[in-house]
Length: 292
Image (cartoon, rainbow, N blue to C red):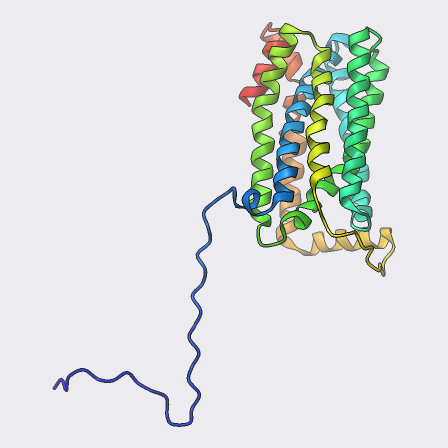
């Protein structure tokens, strides 16, 4: 038989009241939160995205230039290989050194060296002094700089946004990269048709003004070198052991390796496909990369 409404149960006299369970915060569904909350990341992201547009323009121009200079598909692949080989051989060790260095200063220096490389490539093509040897040397130079700049740039995200917004920052960085993959080759196609191949490299050199300006505006606490108990080689070995002992990380490395070896090279040979199979010029090659 119902005896009517009852008073809520209370703890016995003298027993401590149970604390209320805090409500879990609802995650904000806003992919641009990292840009809004962190001015440092905003400066970095805008400058980096503009610079990547120029980098994709240079990639279009470099592939077509290699084909024009050699008329050989193998040599086109060789230019790309020499740009990637230093990243493969040096980036692991460079990552250890990056952790012991002022990353912001290191990225600034690397971007300045990228300007030099792009400006040299522009001048050599514009003046008619470019040779295949120069192209190989500058591609190798770009790869060596990238081997240091890539781990420094990727590890800087934690300093710019903290761990709370790290996933948003990584997602936005990926979005900026893919936005540049659309805009850069499209602009390259137009620039080649209107002003010639050299200006793909010239515009890339100018695009670094944006990223250098963004880096200059970033304000971070002064760098303090942490006390290191391991040598760089010991740190490298420790990182490799962690990767092999962590299934999620090792699986991810295998996926990335398989895609890099079997999936990416078709982009390298796209100028050969554009000219020799589809019968299009450099501007058509740029639009092919845009639609990727």
